[in-house]
Image (tube, rainbow, N blue to C red; front, side, top):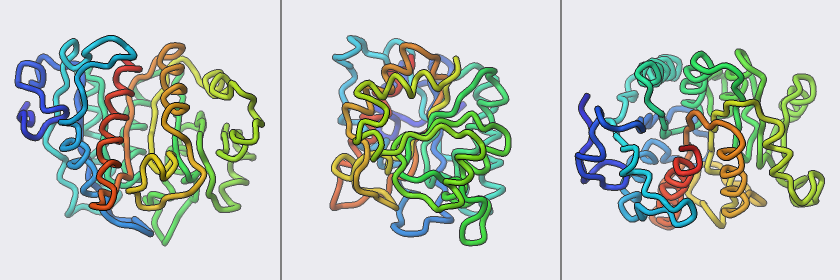
Length: 293
């Protein structure tokens, strides 16, 4: 299978460490942007994450390893979605992820808007038993429809909840009342950002998050879950978000106590006024890989 070369792939890896055959990790870009409701530009997110990754160090000092050389990371050409409806685009992404899982690859999917995430989540749900979905997000994304679309970025977790309600949300700080009702009626475990700050879950709130998860964990990471001081280039930023170190501490703990089977990162909307957001997202991706594998 054709892979992107050193000038375009994640981390700028030479062929020895980025060819498809020898790489355990596969990165899929799904630059869907059809239902954004505030800021635009998420279709450019995957490419800019890859570009910025060329400035991320190969060595992770915290984990004391160069994961990219140990396991190999193959970056595939982006999935062509621009002429498809949201429904058909999600189906195409699902099929792409499922094909990689059947071969035994660890798949990272880059969006695009959050609507894409129901596709890899479904593929992973069908592959792994005892699976929890860990959602980092400012928004619950549990509206049944939004702006007349069931495939809106604001409805992605409602689509996921149609086949699993084993969802744990972290960083939520903006939602409609219907979402709050859905959470209560369906037992969705939600860690609101303000509740974390107010100590509702205690100093070691990350422990409660981890204890809410099953053995296998898929992470869907909307970058607006992070505080705008960390990543501001996103379509719907919200104040009062998660900070860098506490977020990494949680993901590291999940990786050490559970089995992170895959993840996606979505909703980066690159801006010339916040180029650090591109780099921070690329760094986040690599840190997540180091914690997972």
